[in-house]
Amino acid sequence: MGEQSVSATTTPPPRGTDRAPAGSGASPQRSGALTARVTLGRVFAPVPVEFLLVVSSALLLTGFGIVMVTSATMASALSNGESPYNDGLQQGIFALLGVAVMFVVSRLPVAFFRRIAWVALGVAVAVQLLVFVPGLGIEVGGNRNWIRVAGFSLQPSELIKLTIALWVAMILYRKRNLLSRWQHVYIPLVPVALLAIGTVLAGKDLGTSMVLVLIVLGCLFFSGVKLRIFAVPVILGGLAVAALAITSPNRMTRILSFMDENCDYLKECYQSSHGIWGLAGGGVFGRGLGNSIEKYNWLPAAGDDYIFAIVGEELGLIGCIVVLALFATFAVGAFRIIRNSEDQFVRVAAGGITVWILGQALINIGVVLRVFPVLGVPLPFMSAGGSSLVAVLTACGVLLAFCRTLPDRSIARAAAAAGTARSARPPAPRGRKRDS
Image 1 (cartoon, rainbow, N blue to C red):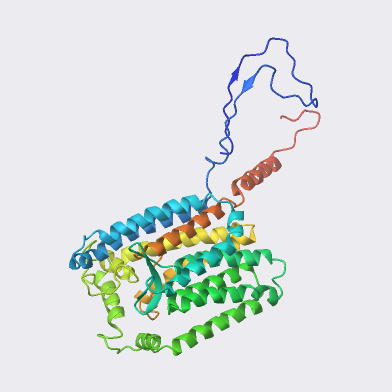
Image 2 (cartoon, one colour):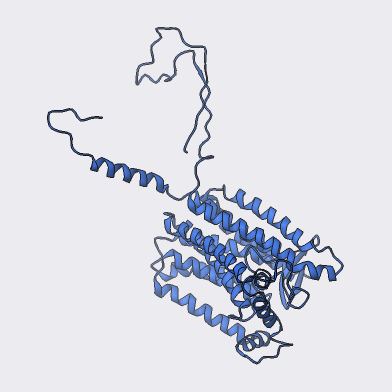
């Protein structure tokens, strides 16, 4: 549905009134006529399939996450003398805020994201530096990556994830004709990205820093730079992560315990062991919603980083497959945006956001399955935490805005079908006028 109009005409002209001659510059309406035209534009135009895939999977995962956070935190809330629905209610409030922001952002033009990229990244880095302000920044689990404002704890690094994807996409878009030279690829991309990631790494949050590195590498990959230029940041990023792991006794302990089958259950392997036991206890059909055993203060971070273990325990293998299917649906919609877009900025930014959300989901689920060492990375859409949920939903809003710029494939298909039908019509016999 393209454009709709409603016309109302009053005071009909007298008979015999001629229309204005063509080319005279006069109004095409008859003299004495009053016409009201209401233009609806593309408000009621059908949305592309990519839009439906992204928005449906995002909303379903968010709703699923609210239910699971409520179930996973009820026991711990009661033991602390709080309402059993406290964490679930907070997650629902942040979900409403995030969904509202998602739909507002989805109406913004692509040029807006290019214009604000520098400012947005600068603001995000400045807010991240507040974690080092005494009395404002707080430390949790050895990581100083939160600030407390008006009784709420916020994680500024979640804002950096979105803004760095938009900023890298803007830089690579402006230099799209110079990407064959490594100087234009690395400058100013590498120094500024290292500065932004360094502010997070200074708070000892290696998991979030790894996700930021993945976002930058994802943007470079989808920009189409040459393999030899792309390989250098990959190698340097791997060496940096290895060096940071080796130089930290705490990180080395987690890595070695992950690789040790006989590690101490009461020390290094306590959390990972209870996560596996939760998944195993659920079986195929699960214990039933709300019937988890691990959430009774056995499994640390049951509503946060290990929410997938609670899903497996309460809803079983079937529940885990549903979560994976929803992320797969999101992946199909996101990669269709990357493939079908004709704008390089859209392709690169959408690639960075897709790598962020899907990569973080794979890391979180891999940690729960004990494929990776414990990294402290939340599961997008589902883990408890307002900052993460609002940031991910805002990123989905950016993807939805990109969907509105995709070429209308239905027009091309209709034109192709019309051409095929026209060529298939038999030629008119000679001497007869062809039917119209």
